[in-house]
Length: 174
Ligand code: ADP
Image 1 (cartoon, rainbow, N blue to C red):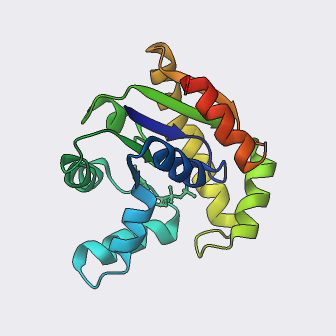
Image 2 (tube, helix red, strand yellow; image 1 turned 90 degrees about the vertical axis):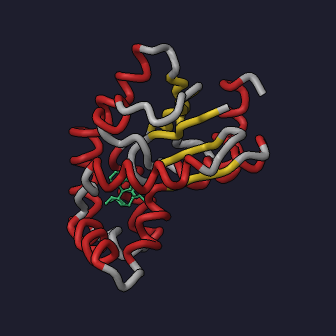
Image 3 (cartoon, rainbow, N blue to C red; image 1 turned 90 degrees about the horizontal axis):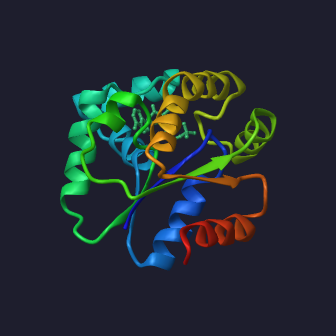
């Protein structure tokens, strides 16, 4: 089964993707993790990605397709992906069939509070606000895209980590 986990910054996508992938015995892919690791490389691409991340901007779709294609091509037995697709262009490309999309709902205040305590270098108040702005602009339309396809499962992301995990399993009928 191919599963996408979506939700605003701080909604727990990465934590829940990891738990779910473990439970399903499949692969967890995070485009954020992939991009952070490329940003640490001393290469033209690394420097370009670093610049985007430091500005709180999304990496352009063409670069994202190349990077995601490379990772997904190796996977044969399903995955849990998080951080992708993040724009309508990325969703419409339909690189691989998506079976279900888990949407972790969380309000901005709670999201910002969690991110500030996480303390990643791009988790300053300014960059959090910038990324949330792009989330509403670019990513919320992707939620609607999957909702129309009947693939969206909405979960209350404000609950504890094990509670959210169980709600996800329930919604998937596992
Ligand atoms: P957050 O959810 O807090 O924004 P992520 O770890 O998902 O953090 O992403 C970190 C950064 O990586 C983003 O700000 C963006 O620059 C880049 N990124 C991750 N996934 C994508 C994507 N699918 N398309 C474009 N840029 C992406």
